[in-house]
Length: 195
Image 1 (cartoon, rainbow, N blue to C red):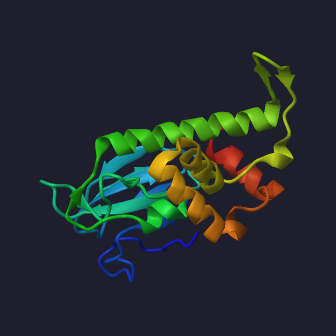
Image 2: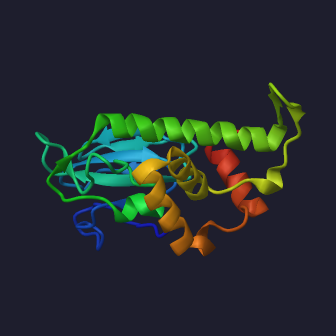
Image 3: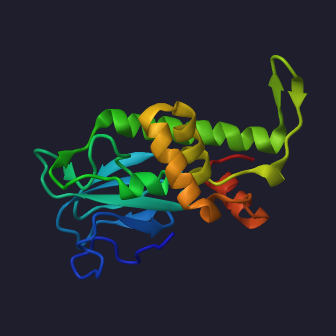
């Protein structure tokens, strides 16, 4: 994941990008000339205004999307894309034109998906009770990344969305293969506040 050091500061080389990823959870809007929608690695979102500083506690990163037209809150995402576009690479490539509006249902959907991922990681860590099989022992070494989790959910939906996700998965299979390393898994646990 490529990050930006200066984000949307007026002197940043990334100021005109449709999205920036900022490492950590401390964001300054001093020197930014427009509102920015920020969503952190834990799924928390806020609209940030110029001239202020913002904290996203325990965030590994913050995904920023510019809001240059406050009336329409236009972004580079269609209503079918994740408004935070940190799901699957399929979502990242399928975003629409800059004339589309942020879809609040999509924001809620992405936040819910992060919560499901948090539950998944917790179960991999500690195990869980299954109605049919009883206690399933946790196996942290078999934890997959958020991108792989998200595309698995897309495939599980079936239909046209599932079909596109399957094609994307096989076209980009190496990036979804395997499980997370111990270091990455610990960072994800920290980001999701799992002890």
